[in-house]
Structures are given as structure tokens and as C-alpha cells.
Amino acid sequence: MRCTIMATVSIASLLMVACSPEFNWRQTALTPTNLQAVFPCKPETAVRPVTLGGQAMQLHMASCTTAGVTLAIGHAAMPLPHDAGAVLRQWRQTTLATMRGKVVGEKAFTIASAPALPDAVSLHALGTGPQGSSLTLHAAWFVQGSTAFVAMVYGGTVRPEVADTFLSGLILR
Image (cartoon, rainbow, N blue to C red; front, side, top):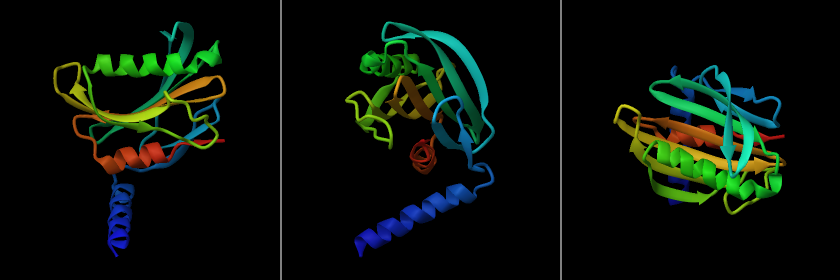
């Protein structure tokens, strides 16, 4: 009985977010990768050079902002995919350092077609934004083949159901 009530409440929460005019979820392919994601708004893209885990690579980002929340996915082709753990660790550390974040929850992150690496994790962190305002982050780092990924939801306040919808909507083909 308790499980039925919890399931009903969870489904109702997701439906409320899904039906919200601020969150018009739509499937988006992140070419040239095999990743598909659901975004609540049309993402813009950008590319910049980065060095992660000692590897120079091009970081491709797709992001959009709605209702004070930014949703973003980054991907980078790793020249040395056997060092994927080092890339994911440094990417996570850099993200947390930028927001002066403190992790309040962390767990292994798995997605179909991606290897279960010790450094493939999802986390919830609290920190500060560029102007010193409070910042909440929900993010996941993972790898498929020679491509490293991050999926992030951040803002002053991030409703858990928004983060759950975004992160659970990731599909690797």
C-alpha cells in the first residue's frame, strides 16, 4: 500500500512538471554523439577547448534556461579513452570548484550502453554562483566509447522532479 501511494505521488509530481508551461519537454539528439536527451526549451550550442585528465579536447555544450534553471549537456571526444576515469574525476572537481560546491548526495550513475565506471556518478551539490547567490546543482558524468559526457541542471532552486526528468531522460543509442 505504501509503495502504491509513493508511486502515485511520484507520477503525479512528474506529470505536474511535464505539464508546466515553463517546461515543454522535447527529445533532442546531440549529434554527432549517440546521446539523446529531453530539454524543456531549445538548447543553444557552444564549443571551446579544454584540458581534462591531462588530455586536450574540444568541449561541446548544449544548454537552455527556463524558469531560472539551466539544463546543459557537455561532451568531449577523448584522445586517450583508457584514461576516462581521470577525465571524469577532473571534470567533476572543476565543476564543483567553480561553484565552490559542497556535495550533499552522490551515487553511481548508470545509463544503458555506457560502461559502469567507478567515476561515472551523479551528485547533488550546493554552492554559490558568480555573483555570490546560492546555487543548486544536479549532475551526472559518464562515458560511452571515447566520448565523455556531463549532464547538469543548476539554478538558485532546482526542483528535484525537474532534475530527475532531465537525468532519467538521457538515452544512448
